[in-house]
Image 1 (tube, helix red, strand yellow):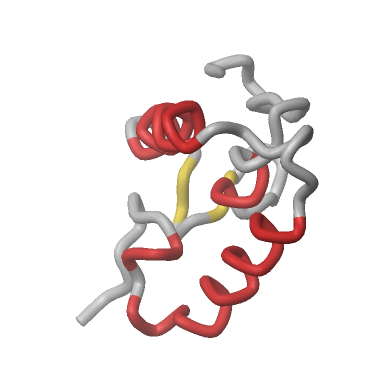
Image 2 (image 1 turned 90 degrees about the vertical axis):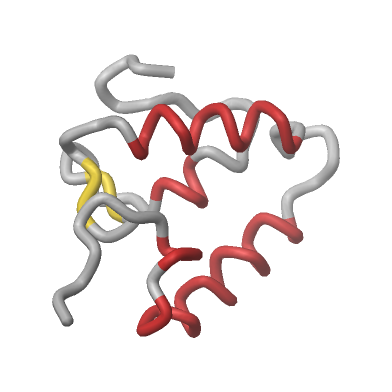
Length: 81
């Protein structure tokens, strides 16, 4: 079975170790910098609808979208959020 191209890392079983890294990174953010859960999920939904998403990675900047979306101060490299 092929890898899901328009999926987040949390949805790709083969990348469980990378998702653990994503969760740890998000958990280490200070509360003052962490995006609230609602904003985080809203951002990820925008990424899921974007043609630049490839297996949890933004093809415009190379980031894991789940890490970029976790911080209040970050933004989408193509201004979608």
